[in-house]
Image (cartoon, rainbow, N blue to C red; front, side):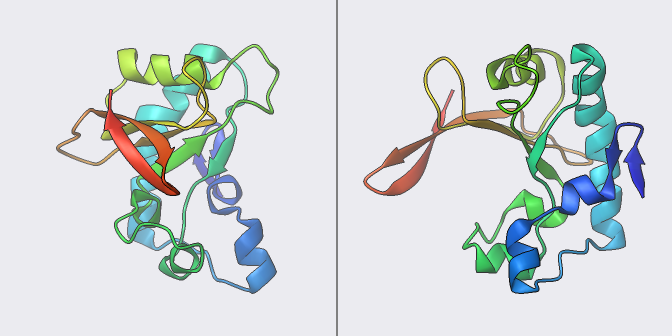
Length: 153
């Protein structure tokens, strides 16, 4: 099932953990609508700008899958409002930093997170979009004392 011209349902629901442990990771109709909006407002503009496939490392997470991986109870991944993009396995021409900067400078978003990595390139980019009231929140995830902390950028 196509979510947008360059994104399909299998890409946003893919989870090796869910497969290994028999966890249903099927989004609801409401969550699919949220993903279609995210694809239209964020994913497709990124794809069109860079002109290369955009790799999603994490998309939808059912509540059962999120609980199993000990994800945040308020994760926007569980609502179909967030994706994690990781270009490290791509063609090498587009970096995670380039994606982060493009989103930050050109697109509307709710949260944009520079996930770990270095000062030059994040390990991946988390981006979310909501139907109304996007906060344009920019954060950097860092590990401190075994916990993840989110610092404003």
